[in-house]
Image (tube, rainbow, N blue to C red; front, side):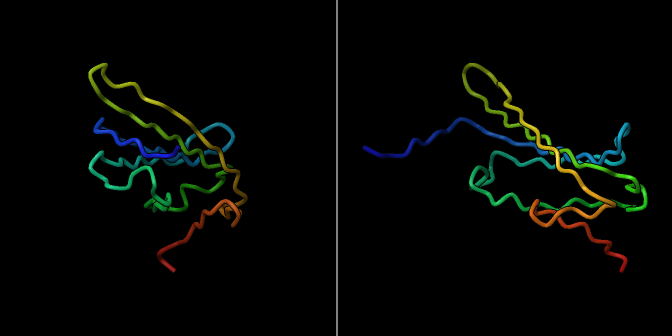
Length: 106
């Protein structure tokens, strides 16, 4: 027996992206995905991060993605968190990781 479960519990998701070297966070951005997004959980995960000055990322060795899914209901909100770290080499991410870093000035 198969079926679908539909919920009206409000969901929201935030994705924090941090560019880091061995000891410091060089740049951090957060993307909020509101509960009104019709296909939030089925999204392909494509996102763009605007970095005003790519030279500030010199020496970055990895990117950390932190995902937080919050849901609310009669019992209140209880966030679920997960993180993923991707190693990069001289600001060139491995293509298998699905990340491309481009300088828009060129």
